[in-house]
Image (cartoon, rainbow, N blue to C red; front, side, top):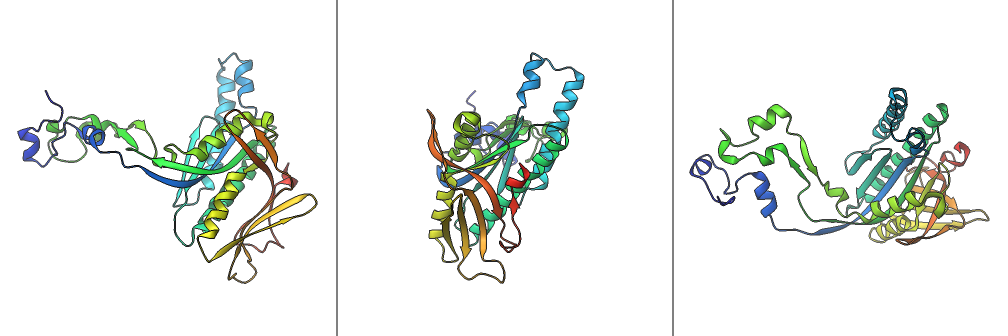
Length: 307
């Protein structure tokens, strides 16, 4: 039987001509939308060593330690998730945060809040790791593009034949089972090159000069900020190099009292030159982060003091 053929019963209660909801999704023409994105990839260090030592067969005690470590990191990241606009995904011992950059006039502020959440989560995870004599986490922050091209998910209800439904809407079978995910292709991560770069850099790790439980900022992230600031009259980028540091800040053109910066980053003066098969770039280690809601002369997140 032709899967797109209509049925009299389906037509009588308002269903489309598709055999099931998945048929409608598969038949929908591709609508490519490319946008600018940023990504922060945080990865627990030394995570694989106990698995390797156990020959990938952890006993119950080791499983308990693994689960406790993952739970702590996951819960900390969830505490530092600004909404709306951010998407976060956990992949075993890694956490991906990504944000699609919009054309809104306050996008620099939203990006600043996104970055503050990533930095704060990194600090708190490291604090928890140190308390348990663990290795800490490394975070890599990048910029790039995302190409949304197709439907983001398939759920159980998408497979249910339309003519078996007593009424339009979610089927009884799906309701009883909780309508679980069968396929997940989240829009924020569809062909996300910032995510790809962050993963490549983190995977290279010390081979690319990204050593220890630090935050590393790829040049592509700074490029996104500069491009964003050129499209608005509310912010401007300022740069200043000292003997040992490189200050990269986004200033308010008309600053509120005691808050001249929308965000600020004190980076290593000289970036690390990364040359990999898949990627060549310059990567800075973040030394201090200045949030939007504090006077930079009075407060910052000092990552060096936490190493």
